[in-house]
Image 1 (cartoon, rainbow, N blue to C red):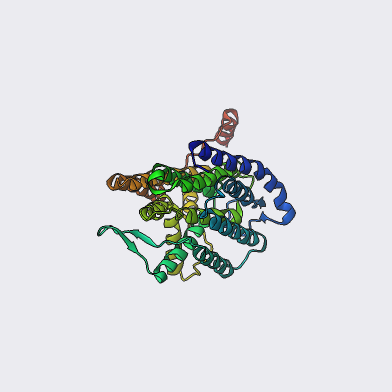
Image 2: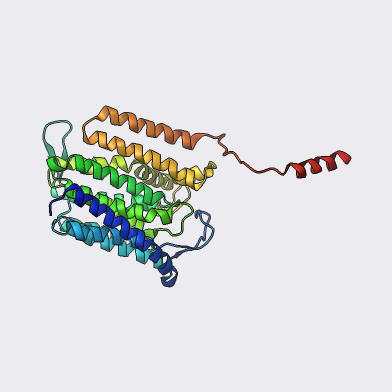
Length: 366
């Protein structure tokens, strides 16, 4: 099937509509199978039990769209298989609360399977000379495994506020889709564009039910699936030159979750805590602690993610200085958002003037 603009729009629309349709189904199904998020610690931002089976809608929308519009592409099959396995792992974790080591080990096995099925990072552009740097078998294996497992977990770690993970994944997917589109004919990236549009469509179809105040969470099934799909789909480009687009662009687009992941690992190592242990020190938790509500905090991070997405587009066009300016702007905004010790959100309350006057009169009589 030739990938035209009509096909691209159809893939996006199919994923969007399916995700939109299955989100209410997931809300009703979650309590029946025990997929409920019950707040048991101070790290949670919600105060009542919430369905956490929304990943089903994202999964169905994305995979169905890929099967309909990209089934003929041989590189999509491993992605569909890997995405399905990761989604199942996430659902089992949502239902059984798997130990972190078991979940991490299962992710490693899926990453190894992807490598065995030909999904590999074998080379990268040599910026210090001409041509490309080819990885040996061992380095190729390590880089591919680290890439898949690392990016898979970035979305999972930022899934702490209503709509944050779904919106960030949508922005990232749309940014990568646009980069793939403008380089599609030259580097054979149109299949990446189609797949990323399908992923973005699923996120946006789910977002009305997940944005604050959320009616449902995506759960680990959804967040791990999104991270894996971004990691896997970004490296299916067939040409050597596309590797820099496939690897560097997602790193820039996912700058916020990647930074948050590395900062979380560093923070836990300094505090001598297990790396996989959850805490309340993520960027979104810090914004909430400063007094921003969920809606404002999420919109702030959306904006920074969008800036990083624009920077990624500029990098793909080799406009490095322009991209550096945008990355600097994003860093400044983060600094402003996270380091103002005097920040207090204004509290606007209605005042009963008559009541206040009577209160003042009684105090004067005393």
